[in-house]
Length: 411
Length: 149
Image (cartoon, rainbow over all chains, first blue to last red; front, side, top):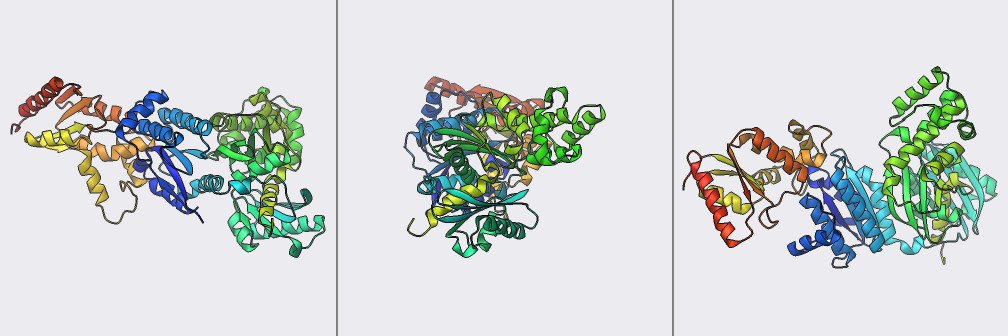
């Protein structure tokens, strides 16, 4: 596999003891991190011309390096921007550099704010997405599914399987993830049965999600791919918005993704997951506490007034406490459901969507996109009409089946 | 002989000046060399591990970014040893450079809090200023106990 060269623009990782983790994450996806070499005079000129008068010399260096990359003075396949978590100055630089590189070059870029606890594992999905965009542009250009393919999304909460034939979804399977392999096998069996095809007939297989490696290896998958790339591709495919800009939001069971997409290829993206209060898991807990099925939470929330209930579920424990307090104080289940949806949407909006340029259409995918109350809350916050495509809960499996068709012999 | 903290701590010129005038410079080079030469660690480039920002908690609270605390784990022990300090403001990058503005502010604050003699100088921009600059450093170092080479 060709080595992807990732230019690192950063302040602080070597002093936080995480540089090794960054290198390790890159190495595990056949990439190498390098620091663009520039002359002293270019550093001065670089940040002067950029116009952001920051105080930290390491940030000035990062700005100058970004300019050198955009101007083509230094060759790279992708860019990784990393600064300390909780540093306001660095956060401004990080966001502006990501935007600057995105708007002025074709380089895929991802940014991350680290602590000393950041590990290679945390960075893996981001690095994998970054290198995929750099390495597999041709594969990502695929707009039509061909042949008979299977896509499996082994997520943290649920496992989804989709069978596609000649650009049509002909079978689906959805199960809670319990034992990763067993759940995947069972979901595939359900999808195969619905599609009326045998496993031997499948021409190519793609896997994604947390269990992608395990499931992919077991099923001899042709494509094992992280969910940022797959979901972007699946979202614009299902929403029929394969050309031009779009924004994909996936509030998952364990983490959330916000992806700025151009022609079906992710440009910038953020992955959150620090607090479960901003995840689908919190909505599951809310439904359980309200004594309703998760599928009933959305319609319930649409009938409620979220503003009537104080709730800020930054942490799932305190969020649940607010929920219990609200019910004890006499709030209606409808209002509590609406407040929970608003709380999750607000946190994704505050923590992640601020870092991604929101361009319409905004497409919500994943299981939580079926919770209408959450979609409405997100639309209200963003002041846009959010698009939820058909089969949005199967997004990872559909994206995998779509891209896997690129591996059919003769395709 | 007095231990003199130099700022920027990476300045080889400043470190050399302090040594020439008979004192011990407290500079980043020594601290970093010690880290790099520590056997058994595999955390390039500076051999700072995730444990070091935790050591930095002695000088900066947990809500302070890890990069500041990691840097403080290097510079903090030097600050505690310092008996005098020379601080050069607005230094050219080629003279010496310290990457994080917040760490730099904290270092200067902690130096002043110690109540040790501190020489504040602006980085010279002309030859004349350069001569005055060296003369001021020489005078400061000579006035420190045991100085004067």
